[in-house]
Image (cartoon, rainbow over all chains, first blue to last red; front, side, top):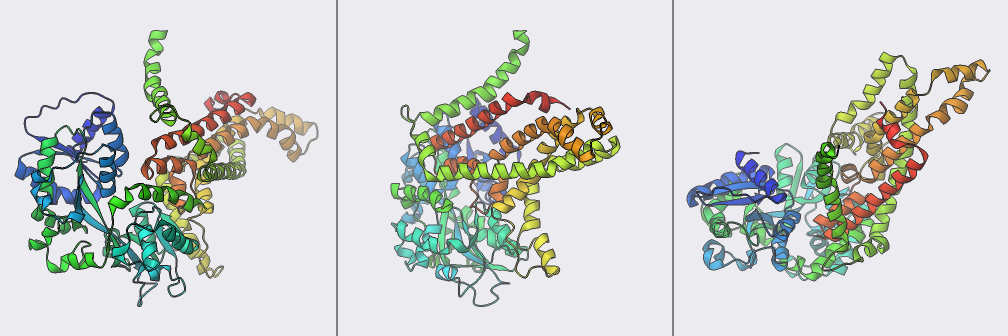
Length: 349
Length: 270
């Protein structure tokens, strides 16, 4: 934990037990929350520190693997201590509908206003992209590797042990693509059809993984021969020498977004920061430090990212074209929430 | 007197009574009083299955831990002091290792390319790796290992209090060693058995990390239900209701057990 993070954490603690923090604010500051680990370190170097310097503000950092319950409790208590959260886009949308997230005024966020409409919502701006891809062991499949979700479902042509994420998001999309739905025609998801297709593969799933680290371990140790995994996890394992690879074909392109908590203590500074954070140059810096794609596609026009590097990234236009763009709007709709609830009974049957 | 204990009472109030009270409140209040959350817990399949599975696993773990733990405690009790310390430290040492580390260690042992499968294949005992983990079996194995000290220690404490004279008296009256064991020693050690079983069973009810890592996603125990309700389904009320039901089951078990033995005497004894 850096001093900044410690400070943020301290504030969080104080706030949590209901004390008022009267931080002497000589300069403007915000508290920014992300998911920690290598990812937060990378964005600190690429985006947070340069933004703080340029705007002349202090960015206090806090990290939490899953921000949603904390957002709910903080805003629910009426006195949030966080300002900006980097979290899966669905939470920003759901939070917006439940009055936990501020509506954004894009006239004050010109960098975001210039982004494609599919990459933002009234409550959120895409910040970085990752992809749920089909990953496989090159030991098991030295040639003719599985290349589509139909291949993943084809246990005769591609015998081997399989793993999927223990979560309906992206898994239902994969099932529908395996059943022949084209990536651009997924939404609204045909939930019945997706679960029916999942029943087919269920007996062949060895592990339903719950954390990214677990998915990496499964592939690395040869516990499974193919699985759905996040691209950054697979490439990290490959870099360490494991014989594993993945394809962007029919990947599900997902994003985390920035959003501002309702009643954030430093709302105005937070808006300024939001604009700065999706600045194409800062955004282009991110993939130099970690295998995630920039949320702002203009980053690919800055010449900061070399072409061979760009080709590895999930949101690079040619890679993005092979994939399905996840609709967080659908997942946070009542139909999406019903599908999430149905997952529990599907798993336990 | 009250002035002396009031700091302790305040701590208990702030750290236990208030949060648990809030938990209970949250399970029945959502825009007004409602029993909807409890209705779901008691009628929906998903919840039933998890509670049933959790009790089954806890029962299996308790029985296996008793079968493994009793001989160990007996051995530690009958050996000379120096040796019994060695036996007990072998039981307690892993106890000081993080649960997470031990769960991963079991993964390294049990998985398809793990030590055990590799060894069996090397010996040509098996041709295909056995499915030892990512199922209920792996969960039970690791959980037994983690909870074993909670069985051995109360057993040992109880056995220590059984006077050796009684066994000698039995022998002097002509009973064989096995007869003295079954007629004298075993009945006298039963409070330890009950205490150990209660500890293991109750701790197992709330296990989270081990089934999460070794269950392969199919072994959904009650604690995982609580976390999924919060993380995945955003149902704080449902999560609270599950937690309250689990808490009440544990209290009920402690209440029933305390009718038979004085738990604090067994557990508080060195």
